[in-house]
Length: 208
Image (cartoon, rainbow, N blue to C red; front, side, top):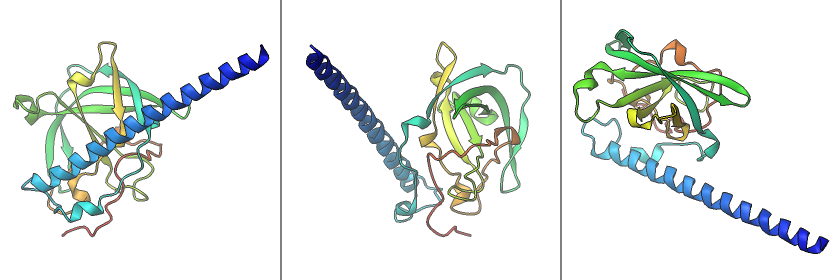
């Protein structure tokens, strides 16, 4: 009887490990496809700071499902538009749309989500949410000016849970070249946390 129980436990354990491996493989493949598409966009975009050869110098953290985070979303209605400055010295009108709260390593963090006022009349971008952030990897393994995430209104569930994948965090174009209006992450979005996910520092020379 004991032998049968031990065999059953071993089989169940093996099944759990197999399912986890398949899940991780699917996640890793999905991030790989996302990054290939990300590189392709540099090639087809006429204003791109990078050539096809340059994209070989893009660098990323290994895909990590622990950075796929379910965050609690709270809407912040009736917020006034404000000028979000950029590294070029110019600014653009944004408004805070909401705040997300999430836990990592036993601590709770918050980040604000923004809407670009100009995009609200665009058929293509009207539902976009912008999430710029800084974290403690900046100037070390990641670009010193912070990183961005793009989300959409439809990503917010009916239960007000928003899944944020930091593996998709990307650099502003200012990381590769001068001459771009890259928003500076507001101080409220500076995380006292090492977000070791998404894009790393560019391995090439910045263009001037």
